[in-house]
Image 1 (tube, rainbow, N blue to C red):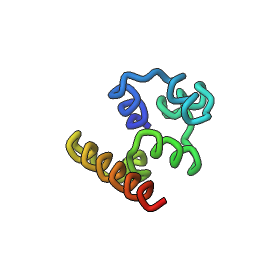
Image 2 (image 1 turned 120 degrees about the vertical axis):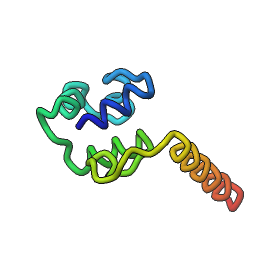
Image 3 (image 1 turned 90 degrees about the horizontal axis):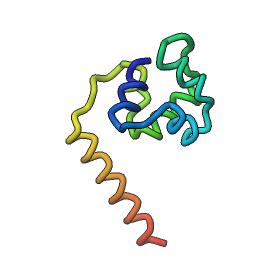
Length: 88
């Protein structure tokens, strides 16, 4: 799954950084990136959440989003979180 590697490298992260943040083994992540093994649904969800992308994107079902689209999605998520905190 080259998209995992692309996302990791775009953020200047090492495999061990992603592994620690997601609770995965570094060797497992390496195997995903090289295509030796495929991530299960739980791993896909963890990685999608960590990289703030859709599962479909990781699976190659949707085209890459632009940086602007990613930024807008992050802003929307922050606004949602702020609204949630205000309601508390």
